Length: 213
Image (cartoon, rainbow, N blue to C red):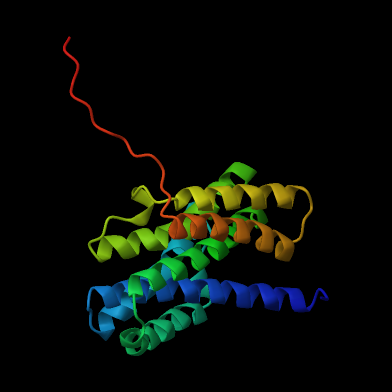
């Protein structure tokens, strides 16, 4: 792959990431039986929410979808498409989980890479990758009156943290974006997929009776 084609590939991968996450938001709207306006709202805030928080944290202005409105357009298009297609998709909760898992893997790397490109440290870049991948889902779940996935026992943020950390290490070792995306994004998706298939979760806190003093 020559250097001229690489930026175009990264751009389309980024658009695909946003589209997948927007689809997870629209599928969540379908579970709540919202109208088409609700689909559009939930799909948009899910698709661009994490990236918006990322840009605000990094001090990047204007935020990415103001600078490139096609990101907003793809969120709207995907949301409307899901509105018409969702009735034909059985077991929409599973579709939501898998769409979210794909988006988690892609957006974790996108967020970490943008932070590194702006000169952030490895720790900040890893944290930014987690924020980018998860905060759109947090906004989605809050608006849909659900406990956010990131706050449940599910292995979710942990998968993003693992993938972001690996990407930062690969970047430090001089590994290119595409290979880093394949490895770190695949790791994030793989951890999340294993958790979904085998219903794995982190141990939760168990309340105990207070001790007498």
